[in-house]
Amino acid sequence: MYSNFKEQAIEYVKQAVQEDNAGNYSKAFPLYMNALEYFKTHLKYEKNPKIREAITHKFTEYLRRAEEIRAVLDGGGSGPGSNGDAAVATKPKTKPKGGEGGGDGEDPEQSKLRAGLDSAIVREKPNVKWTDVAGLESAKQALQEAVILPVKFPQFFTGKRRP
Image 1 (cartoon, helix red, strand yellow):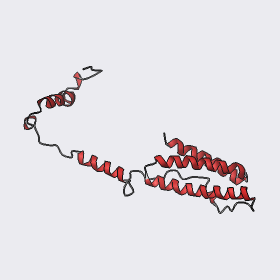
Image 2 (image 1 turned 90 degrees about the horizontal axis):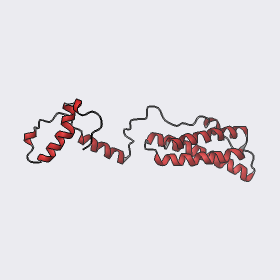
Image 3 (image 1 turned 90 degrees about the vertical axis):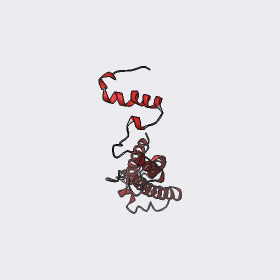
Image 4 (image 1 turned 120 degrees about the vertical axis):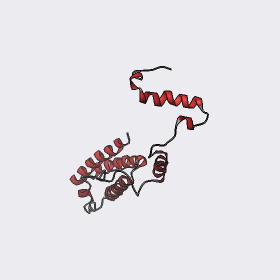
């Protein structure tokens, strides 16, 4: 759902840049502000650090442009000092290509979860028999019924079953 925030922000930015290039600063300013709100909300939910960095970079760029426009609107100055930001802003960078899959820039929570999963995965087939496990007869019986038998005899376990 959070990707809707990013898409909304991009739409507002496109409109804002269009109005900005046309010289309609009074229309462009609220559009930039709306886009910034949506980008801020999206940043709360974004986990990928590379995408966060790209959006943060664009966020600061659009914020600087909105402040320039506000200064012009408030002060009635000699026009906004467009140093190419508006031309660059026509195509907002949303996702860097090839940045998926994580790596060095993972947040600690993500790496902790990944380490826990890696330790839980059995990489080689264990050499343990049912008779090697002492006691726990009811647990072994439940495992037999829930896991082993459906794998060995799938034809008996089709459709809905009720306990």
